[in-house]
Length: 256
Image (cartoon, rainbow, N blue to C red):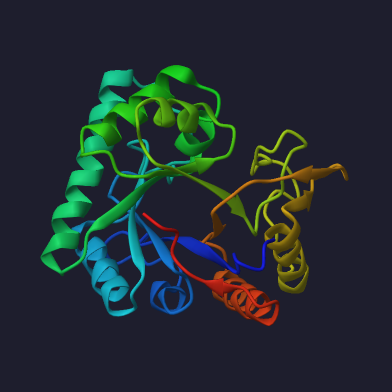
């Protein structure tokens, strides 16, 4: 890592409760991360939750992103849906627009878009759904789109003139091809805080990580993600922040 580039963005998926049902400690995470992926009501979240997260993000100087998903509240957006591309396009536009209206009402704005769960993983390879997501973002004025390096969706986003933001995951295992290990596979989600910190520092300083079967792979990214729905989320995010700070690396939102 260049001495001139000693910062990285840290994002987290927030606002993933629904009504009286809460998930994760959003307030604590917003005191740590630099970007917040806010659920837009399709896999989780609701208008009041969206507003609360936007208010907290504004007071914490945290950048707000639209965490768009399949229409899948029952499955938390973690199930593939064979949705018509036109319907997916409109669902993406709808979710961004809803969050943008709420964000503006509390004095902030939506600065980027990040797909969630099964949609995120599907559009790594699924050309039709990837194109639909890009079209949905373009319809909202062309916000930056966050995703996995080498994915179909980022390739198509670049072709459409969108700013793309690649990310890496501090708490997820990788396949040798740089994709994420399925959550159905043991070891896909990481929980050992100290191991995650050491892994993250190497990811940021060397752009390398050990894949699940032991090979070393290279990653390119502008942002790191820590999931907000795991029991250790706050401990992981805080330890990652402190570990990176100890290595001389600050948490700063990526440049929009």
